[in-house]
Image (cartoon, rainbow, N blue to C red; front, side, top):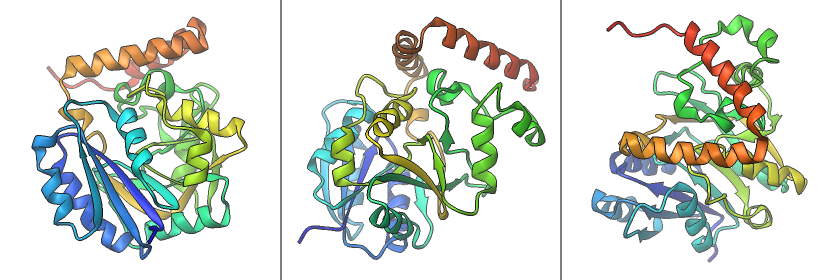
Length: 286
């Protein structure tokens, strides 16, 4: 029997988070599902966690860390569900959250959807972005939260378009059409995923969502933020376990990819915005 939903999770030294994520799946949906774990750190115990989860699953260990985008593409190629969900292992689902995302995709087939995400303290995270922003070119690891007062966000959206989406995602009560969604939890039909194609394997940390959603937009596939579907996201559980020098190396490689695409003027402009924000952001005492 073909499952309704395939869950694709890329693991890297996040077995504890993965165990919690799988437990939360039991309340997230009533749909038949399979769980696919692509494991970039097979020594981590993820295989045993998947097998004890109670879900029908497939475990694919990798001999080395092949990166997030390549692992996602590998997982989707082995998925057989009608609908695909790409999710990070540090995401916890609220009750029926996946059911709400699946229902939207069933009613609006040419869409990709993402949930409202909260951090462990319950604060709403910004998970929708413009195609060109600090996140897409400079990278999320460099942006340690906006120093601009929230009341200023609407007026400053011309400086940093991401501020507009930060405000919208906090206050939205109804589904919102957005340009780009965070890749930590995405749901789409199999046919839409195959039409857009996999994630760009030349990118790992910076801009992979923007590049993929740009291709989707060109095909007439829209992105929707669904606030009634709620998940909790710890953020960067896997990235934080990669050596700092390796993260910088990969991030800089991604930035050069975007520099060639957007040109030096875009890079310089975003660097100036980032410099202003660092001036405003208080520094830790020595």
